[in-house]
Structures are given as C-alpha cells and as structure tokens.
Image (cartoon, rainbow, N blue to C red):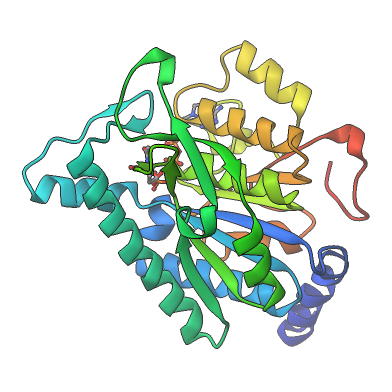
Length: 296
Ligand SMILES: Nc1ncnc2c1ncn2[C@@H]1O[C@H](COP(=O)(O)OP(=O)(O)O)[C@@H](O)[C@H]1O
Ligand SMILES: CC(=O)N[C@@H](CCC(=O)OP(=O)(O)O)C(=O)O
C-alpha cells in the first residue's frame, strides 16, 4: 500500500470511534513527563484540540506537582509527601495556587493558539470543587482537600458554549479556605460527576503491567474484577495503587472507560482513542457491554 493511501486508512480506522464518541465528554488528567517536555506538551494539546474539532467534549484537569516542588524549593522550604499527598501549610498552599494558576493560563494559551476556544478555571470557580480536609490514614497534612461535592454548572456552561474547560486542582472548604487537591482525585471526581464517557490519565509508564519492569507484560484491557485481583495479589502496588483505585471508583461512578496511558508517547490520546489496538490499559466494566470495534 502506498504511503498516501496508508494515511487515509488511518483516518478510516478512526471513523467508528469518531462516530461513537460524538458529543461525549472525555476528561484528560494531564501531568507527568508530558507536562515537562515541550514536544510532548505540544502533542497533548494538539490531541485535545483535535478531539474537540471532531465533535467530542474534552476537559483537561491538570497537575503540576513537579513545578510546585521547584518553587517550594526556591523559597527554601522542604517538600513533604504523605501517602502520595503534599503536606500543605498556608504558605505551601499560596505557592501551589500561584504555580497551578499560572500553568492553567499557559495551557489555555496553548489551546487558543490552535484556534480552539478554552477557559481556565480552578475548582474554586462557580463552587466547582467543594472539599473536606483529607486525612490519609488519619494523618493531618494541612490544607489538602477530599472532594465532597462537584457543582458541574460552570463546566456545563463552558461546554454548551464550545469552550474546552481547563481545570486546576484547587478547591474550597466549608471554612472558606483554599485546599490543594491531588490532580488524579480531582479528575476522577469531575469525570464521575459528569458521567463522562472516558477518563484518561497520562502517566510515565506504559500502563498497568504484570511486571512493571517489563513493558511487554502490559495489560491492555482490565475488568473491575481483574483490577481487584491484581491489587489483592500485589501485582499493582506503589504509585499505581491509588491510581487504579481511583480508576475503579470512576468506573463505579458511571464513567464508561478509564485509560491509563503512557504520556511519554507523542499523540498517546489519539493512539488510544482512535485505534483498535490502543496503547495503554483500559479499565472497563465488562458487564456494561462493548462498543463495536472495541478491543478485549
Ligand atoms: N503493576 C504495575 N504496573 C505499572 N506500574 C506499577 C505497577 N505496580 C507498581 N507500579 C509503579 O507505579 C508507578 C506509577 O505510579 P506514579 O509514579 O504515581 O504515577 P504518575 O506517572 O502519575 O506519577 C510506576 O512507575 C511503577 O513503578
Ligand atoms: C494534595 C496534592 O498532593 N496535590 C498535588 C496537586 C498537583 C498534582 O497532583 O500534580 P501531578 O498530577 O503532576 O502530580 C501537589 O501539590 O503536588
């Protein structure tokens, strides 16, 4: 097949997915290497803009943990994580908010440059993310939020007017204080509240593997039962454990498909969403039925 016809084949392969996901909400948790490397950053933003232009309703929830740590270091403070969450005192919260809001507007600018409309907000806007204090294993780690309520009105309004919402993981507590939210948690809560069709996490590993040191053991599709068994037998551990637990919660909250993708691969979102083979791990409720052309 000539190269030029091959290109058309690629578009045709995407056809059933473009049809099935028309107008569907897709939440992308953007973080990790894909946020630190210019080329990867550009490719993620291009993918999200393309999803919008082919008729999907993408939403970006972004992290920025490494950038926050860099600025904490610059002011001579120590960074401390407890069970994967940043210990956040008042000063840390101020720095985190400045860094996340700056990143947020930078992402808006990147999307707008491609001729697609975007609005950057944090979970404080429109009461989007209302939180309680999070106490992992009963430990007090300061202004870290556990999302207790999502008011989707601001997102619904933006989507209805064709904007891509870009969301920073910051929330408001009942005490009127600002809280730092782990971006995975924020993305899950938002995807669950919206009943999103898809939630995709960009990470720095191929996906969930039987052996994390061997990429050839990637698990392409994982049912809720598989996830439970792999957690029980210790195959899923470390940083992957809270991620998969979040994924399972999202599927149980009604999200159609949750994907753990390798954000180090350029255009990983397009490769996952628009090709039969996909590239990462898809976590699905197999009892909910499959799409035409879906891998299993
Ligand atoms: N079964 C598994 N498959 C893939 N990664 C795993 C698995 N078990 C543990 N891990 C670890 O989890 C890490 C991914 O979690 P983490 O680093 O928190 O994600 P993020 O890329 O969002 O920062 C991997 O780098 C790997 O070391
Ligand atoms: C409470 C908590 O840990 N909040 C995170 C928020 C940013 C984040 O989650 O960024 P990544 O997705 O890039 O890790 C933090 O302060 O680092």
